[in-house]
Length: 108
View 1 (tube, rainbow, N blue to C red):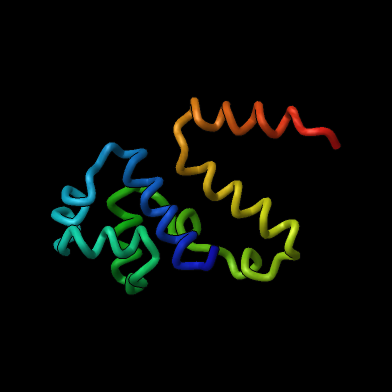
View 2 (tube, helix red, strand yellow):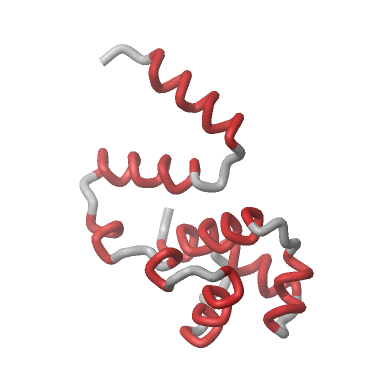
């Protein structure tokens, strides 16, 4: 997973957390809905100004949404753990429970 994907997943996470559609978010930000979809899929990178507006709208800090530099320099095992964790942030509670059950059933 590269940084635009992580960023896009976080944008999607906060949008869904706030029960907002791509169209509604696009309307609030004054952009096309396709732009929001492209951000969430990692096909576009938002400007810093747009990131600030997104964060303001969700009531979060930039640090809540931006991938850290350290996230890009992890060893392969830690990178996989990070990617699983990032994906889990986008899941519903029930889905996270399933993942937890599966992980806990694995033998060390």
